[in-house]
Image (cartoon, rainbow, N blue to C red):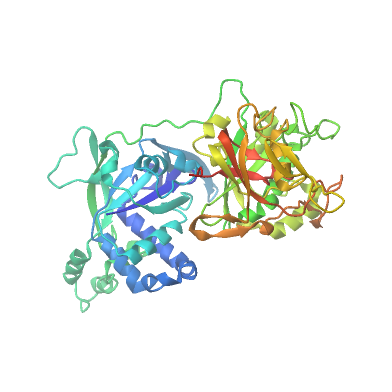
Length: 586
C-alpha cells in the first residue's frame, strides 16, 4: 500500500468532471484515477531529465519501459481516497468577447481547506498521522506493492508535479508512509461494489479509471481486425497497444475517432461522504475595525527565483507599492517631509516587512508575506490588491532601474507574478505560515547583515562585551543581532522581539550554509545583500547603512518559545535577516 499526498497552493482545485461541460460547474472531487495517472506521465515527460541529473542512480528505473511498467502496475488496482472535510464547491463567472458577443464562462473549483494550502512547513518524516492529515487535504491510497527503486522514482515525479487538474490548480505532492486505518471512516472515498448500497451517510460517485492491463489486452483482442475496410479499419489501426499508451490519448484525437470515452477506460462507482462540501470559506478577518496586518501572496513563475534573490524580488515589490501608494507610511516608513522615522519608539520599524518563504527542497521562493504591526489602511490595501506583475511599468519614475530589473527577472511569461491568497491578523496565520510560528530554536533563512563594525583594541584583539547574558565580541554579527533584538521597535512591536524579563537567548551559533531538504545547500555569499540603485548596486543617498557587504547565518536558541516573525539587521524590511522555526535541539 502506497499513499500519494497532494496539496493545492492556491487553496483551490480546478477541474471539470469527465463528460460534463465547463459551464455545468461540476467539479471532479476527488480527482479520478485516470487524471492522476495522466499527471504522473506528464511529470515524467517534463522532469525525467532533471531527476536523472539529480539522482543518476534512478536512471534505469526512469527508462520508458520501466516507467510504463510502473504506471500499469498502478492501473491494475483501484485507489481509495482520504479527502479533507474542510472543502466547499464554488465557482466564478465572467464574460469573454467572442466574435463581438459576450459569452458567459464559468470556472468551477473546489476550495480545499487545511494548513497545507497556505504554505505551512511540511511535516517531518517522523510526524504523526494526525499532523499529516491536517497538512495534506488529499491522500490517495493505492493498494500496490512497489520495489524500492520504483518508490523512489514515484516520489521524485510527485515532487516534480506542477499542477493537478487544470493548469491553475497549482499543486505540491509527495509520497507518504500512512495507512488508511489512520483516517476517519467519514473522510474515506472508496470503490463501491456493484451490488452494494452507498447508505444514507454516503453517496455514489462515478470516476474514470483505467482498465487493468489484462482486461485491456482481452478487450483489444476482441476488436475489429486491421484487415477491416472503411472507418472501422481506420479506428482499429488507431487503437492504443497498451494501457500506458491509452493514458496518453488526446481529447481531440478521441473525438475525431468517434470515442465517447478513452479506449482502455472504465467507469468505477465510488462512495463518498453524502455532504462532501460543507465548509464555508471566508476571508481572514480580525475584529471589526481592526486593520489587516498581514497580506500573503503566492509567487508564480515559469522559472521560480531562488531564495538567494530575495532582496531583488522584495526591492521590486517595495518600489511597486510605493508607486501605487506614494507617500504612504506603511510602505515608505517616512513622514510627510520624507524624513525616516526614528530607530526606536512606538512608530519605529512599524512600516511593512516584505518577507519571503521558499520551497524546503528546491530553495525557490513560493510565497511573499507583507507584514506591518500597525496594520494597513485603505490606500495601502488598495495598492496591495493591485500587486500582480513584477514587470509592471507602474514605477515610471525609476525607468532606468525598471529596465535593469526586468533584465534580471525576465519579462512577459518569464516575469514572476503574485497571486494574493489572504489578508488578516497574525493569529490567522499561526498554523499556515511558518514565519508566524512559535519555537525555542530559530535558524536563518536569509543572511543577517549587521549594521555596526567590529570593535578592536589597539593590539588588534576583539573587544568583548556582555549583552543579554552572553559575552560576545562587540560589533560582531552575533553581538549586533542580540542588541537589535532587544531594542524597541522591531517587527513584533514596542519593547523589541524579546522581553528580557520573560525570555533570554540560551545559545547562539554560526551556520556555514543554508541547508534545505534532500541535502541541497546555499552559501550565504550567494545571497544578494545590496539593493539596486540605477543600473548598478550603489549606496543609498545617505551612504551605505550596512557595516558589511555580506551576511551571516545564525541559529538562535531561546530559554522559552518565542513567536515570530523574527527579522533584524540591514535590509530587514526587504527580507534579509529572516529567521524561521527549527526543530528544538534534543
